[in-house]
Amino acid sequence: MPPKPKYTKEQIANTALNIVKEQGVASLSAREVAKRLGCTVSPIFTMFENMEDLKWAAREIALKEFEDYISDFKEYNPSFKRIGMRMISLAIHEPEVYKLLFMQERPKGHHFNDTIDELGEMTNTCISLIEKDYELTNAQAKMLFEAMWVYAYGIGSLCAMKVCDFTEEEIANRLGQIFTGQMLLIKEGKTDLIIGLPEKKEGKL
Image (cartoon, rainbow, N blue to C red; front, side, top):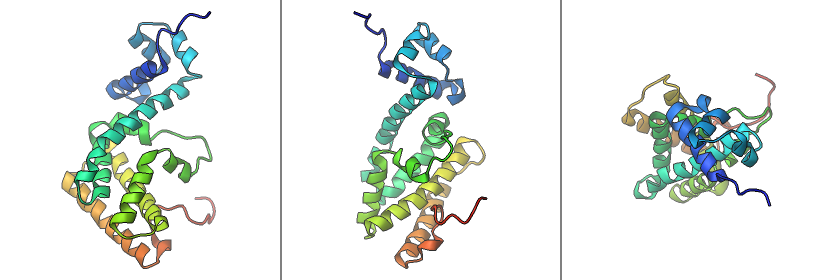
C-alpha cells in the first residue's frame, strides 16, 4: 500500500494562494510552495500535474473567497452595482488576487464566453438580479451583464496595475452612468451600440 500523502490538494492550493496574496502571482513556484510546506516538491507534483494546474486550484479557492466578499450585495440597492463596486475594491486592496482571478493568460483561441463561464455562479446571480430589478428578459440581462463586466474589469485592471487611482465616488458614478446608458440602449433595441460585446467578426485588428 502506498504511503498516505502528507498534504492534501486543498492544503497545497491554499499555500499557493497565500503566496500569491503575500508575494504576487509571479512569485508562485513549486520551490516556494515546498518551502512553505517544509517538504520537497515531490508531494506537489504527486497531487498536481504541473504548476498551471496548481495555480488554477488556487484560483478556485480565491473565487470562493470572492463570492463571500461580494455576498452582502442583497443588503444594497441596486444589488448588481454593489457587486461591481466590490470587484473593483478587490483590485484596489488585493491586486494580486484580482490578477489571479481575472488577469491570467489563456490558451490562444479562448473565447469570451469561456471567460464568463469561469466566473462561476456569480454570473447567474448577476444576470438574475438585473433581470428582476430592471424588468429585462434573460437575454437582455445577460447582454447587459457582459457589457458591464467588461467595463468593471477595465477599471479593476487599471487599479490592480496601479495605472490609475479612483475614489469610491468616482467608481460609483462611472459604473452608474455606463449602466444606465447601456440599459437604455438595450430597451430601445439598439443592441449594436452596446460596448464590450463580441459581435460580428469584421477581420483582424
